[in-house]
Image (cartoon, rainbow, N blue to C red; front, side):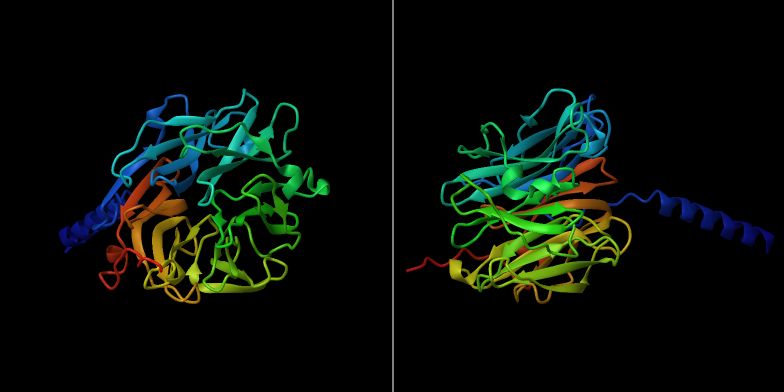
Length: 377
């Protein structure tokens, strides 16, 4: 009996140690995955964080991220953060080298990249938050730069703080949400900006980025958020909320003048930046309206990176498929030029930043598959 008891104890201890040191694997059935940014790629970098992913007008994929040099601290805690990118020209199968997009002198940092593609002008806008820790510590500025050649070269940055933030917000903790914004069906560019003192606000441009407007209607509760246009032309914001373990959804049918707000118990969330995008729209010749949503599907702890589909404009969602069960945080989705889906996300407690690609067929367990849009008459 004593030997049996000892055996059980030994097995229990071994199992416990295994559970604590469990090595998580990427989900079976995804087409490929690759760690795009980690510190082994540059000995001078403490960590890479805050992923953003976009499909360029020519079909190239652009993955942008913070290159945090002295530490993994956020903008106001680090005097040397750069914006870097990698590019893929074959739907994420292989990727080019790391390219530096923005590198200010020591003491100044750029952080939290986000992207919008203008399908009319074929330009890409890259936004980030800027701080000069040497002269104006804790003062946030909001910058944008653009590319007219699919992200190969970029313009000089433009400070748009005065256009999208009130003067009395000068010392407030404010930032453009990382990830991506959108272009609506009428050509308007839209994006999300958070002021932790007053709420989340929508800003955008009606002249393809020449000037930017600000909608002075606070949206709460909402931290880092993403916006999509629904089939009926209304706007929907899917927002991070840090206390209740769920996402919040805000909708507007009057271009942001007023908003209807509701919690989404179906979309559990640990208080983390997520991603929502339009996959297909009937008006574009597809058979179905589809939205995609990716987040760390867990009420507590950033783990279990999952992607879901909605066929009713965000009213309900599928259970989704887990791309990675282990530690996973910020994520950014994009539709690839061949109709596959790509997700770029923080993995294993911010030590890796992985791009994974998969099909709609895999995501829906063969219940749905991508078909090219019908040509419109």
